[in-house]
Length: 262
Ligand code: GLP
Image (tube, rainbow, N blue to C red; front, side, top):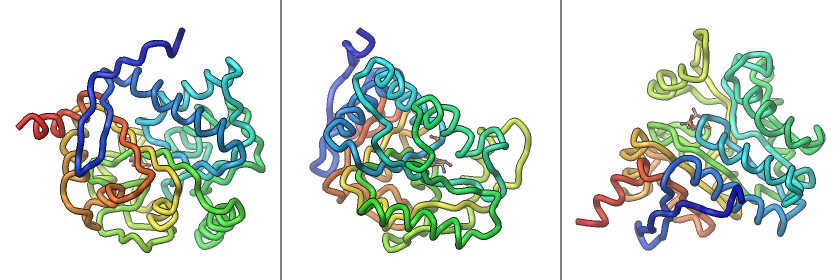
């Protein structure tokens, strides 16, 4: 019953691609959870790369609920965390590690050896980067990436200026990322640097699900989906990916819809 009604409004097109728009964040999240559950059922040993941030949390909670209803077993898959703020670890509320452990990896019961996340407290960032790359390589690459989009068009911490051959590692954070990032934290942290899986690994994934919700994302979604792919807007590189799926609520889709109706 929980998933019986997906309040799908209508679809649209952008550069020969279709996208489906959901009425609100709740229906968007449930649709993404169902899509991921379907993927996990057919690819039970696959490697998933999951973004933290606010956007995917509803989908991840819904996915855990599906497991508790015995509709999917998430524990057979493997998981690599997308990114982390340098200087922050699990003990810091708002860190990617804390959010993902408390919302998803913990409640889903993911075995620790099926999981690789960046430790933002480790000063040996080369080790952290190599650990993630080795984990991805051992699994034959990322099968599915669930991503959000930053207000500047970033994916993970692939900031504006990042090219498609960037495998990942540490990065100086863009002004927008540092400003917007304050929303995750109750107390101020210096948000200068991040560590991330790079575009090279993400774009090699078989499936990439990009979620966005709310009118605040409408402008950057339109830019990244309509303008030609360019490092100044990293999410624009998704346009040409054969396994790209775009999931939006009405707010985030509003500018794409306006253009479609012109
Ligand atoms: C954050 C993270 C990304 C996230 C994006 C959108 O800074 N680095 O992994 O997907 O920006 O975040 P949100 O979903 O909170 O809007």
